[in-house]
Length: 298
Image 1 (cartoon, helix red, strand yellow):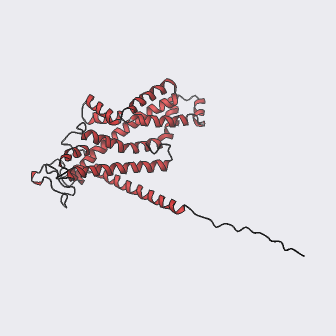
Image 2 (tube, helix red, strand yellow):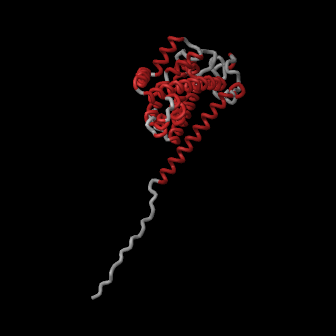
Image 3 (cartoon, helix red, strand yellow):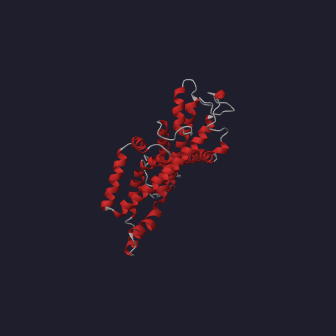
């Protein structure tokens, strides 16, 4: 009896794309969030830059005949207790808040990056001193530290920027130090050291260019927190003083009218929330694009 051999052939499995549809949806959602955040923050930035031409009314002009006007076609955000247009004041407040935030973040970033570079590369006593100073600063909540400094040195624009700078430099220093510790053992740094380059030259010429991405992401993520901190100080009367508009002072002025004229407080609060949310979404997107090691809890 002759047996017919049975040949087993392997049929290639159909490719499966499990999870590809959810991944595409996540990517589309991320792109949408990024585009929306960029559009919102860009609109606020443009309005702040061109505030005198964009604002429909004079933000400090008083009109007692128009007090507590609700939102309408004439006054989109309504008017406050002195008849001032809230939209115009919110635009002027954006100019103030973004200017202060930009200056404070830039100064805090430069100071923190310089100290982080020095501590991470030089090590030893320099690193210990920088980290102890950073630990001392981070041990205090930023709001408490800002309140103490504001009460000690007084309230004006320059002092407010200085306070916000001193309250935020330590985070830059810690993250930059970690980046420097991972870069200082790389071949290009070792070769520069063997070639006789000075520590300052190595830090500025070889290490600093490699942490630009980290600096940009840190600065973008820090903008939102600095805006919140500036608004908090203005809310407590330690920031920008009236009649100059500030989101924090506008919220403070309107909190007494929540039951009768809610828009006086709610409108600047919504502008503040939307701006900070857009800045944070931009920072998250930059962190993902640049593949930095900054944690999501930053």
